[in-house]
Amino acid sequence: MVWFKRDLRVHDHAPLTEAAAAGPVVALYVVEPAYWRLPDTSERQWRFVRAALADLDAALRARGVALTVCVGEAVAVLRALRASTGFTALWSHEETGNGWTYARDRAVGAFCRAERIPWHERLQAGVWRAMTDRDAWQAFHDRVLSAPSVRAPDRIVAATVRGEVTAGDDPLGLTAEPLVESQPAGRRVAIGLVESFLAGRGRDYRRGMSSPRSSAAVCSRLSPHLATGTVSAREVLRRIAAARRSLEAAPPDARPVPLTAIDALVARIHWRDHFTQKLEREPAIEHRSPHALFEAARAPTGPDDPRLRAWAAGRTGWPFVDACIRSLAATGWINFRARAMLQSIASHHLGLDWRASGAVLARLFVDYEPGIHWPQVHMQSGHTGINVPRMYNPLKQSRDQDPAGDFIRQWVPELAGCAGDAVHAPWVAGGVRGYPPPVCDATAAMRAARARLAAVYGHPDFAAIARAVYERHGSRVRPVRPVPRMREARRAAAAQLALPGVGDG
Image 1: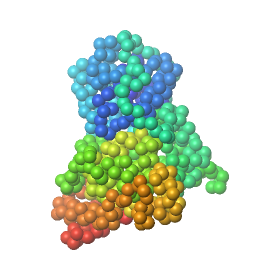
Image 2: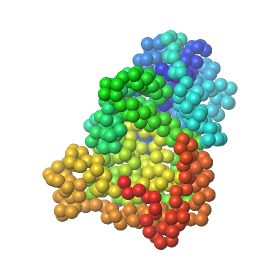
Image 3: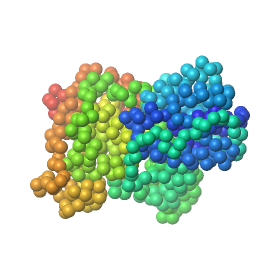
Image 4: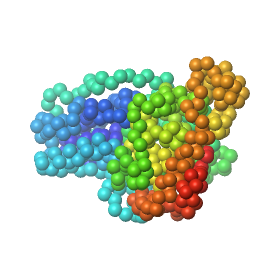
């Protein structure tokens, strides 16, 4: 039994290749209704997965076995298939998902032990299960991602599955979330994105990735494919490395993309595992801040909180912020800088609990990966204790990233008639009918956020806890000061002034 989860491909799929060499195979995907009812999952994510499953089924059929898709709870499905097929071993990749999938995998492990079924779990990426030494992680990660890709089996002998177990087209009955733009799924699409980036689409990657006006075109757009595993990070990196070697031999002006753009993309692909390793090592940080003092200070936000509702609906009164969240809601994707800004605004300016705002963003992201998402939410909320907190000035971001206001006018049509700087700050000229004034004064909100951070940074136990967070999760690639500017922070806490080191990007 080969159980597909976040690895919807046949290439570079060690469990499939090893199982096919061992005997007849059942290729299984379990549609789990309870998972798709969680607060961090959504119909737009399921739609991408469903398309990826169709592509996977076609690739499997070309090799001799169809994808068996079952609806239900994983242990119940496996128990029924055990009775139906008599399968003698379970093969899968390790998965770093949310707390729900973690609990499900523990239940599957208990089932396999009770039934004396060996469960062969294989690495999918450079994430180290049961890691005890963060200092050794980088070498492990590099070794895994530089290893040769696993060749897809040419032919798979299919085991017999008795009874009707295949799911219908939409077994979940989720409410449709139409997207004005959506990314197609499948391996061919993913490989095409790599090739088009290298052929010239990524020429302005480093300059264009920061603005939502240009990032949709120049970014790799591989994130939903990596999140669902239609292509492996290892295969992507090997293809990029081969192209880079060819480009090195060409004069700089003859290269379709500069080497610096390729290197920047490679770095971001590697960062995925760095963040995922945090959730793998400490699954509880999906629900609590990694630094205990920030967790103690965290106040829950209710679903009907007016500031949360305004932020989620793109009605904060800050045009660029509203354009970003509306664009994300309409397309399922937005660039990293905008994601960071949206979470920072929610946590710092609006004082919202990161759990509430983080869940909203998780549902909106077609490319939602818990291992990346929740550690990033902590960072942008300033709750790690080992990263310098960063606050984004909504007006400065608007003028820097959308100087002409075209992106704002596209996604906030209420401001289509605003000329010049009024599109960035319509409240200055008295406001625009149908568009709200700012939900709060940005300067005063940033000052209050700094005071909240300073109070935590000034606690006498802050440094010791922060050092422990660094030991568990801190990057070892570059020297990092795990406790930024503690002396200044304590002075700031005492004076209730701005916290030194807090960026006003």
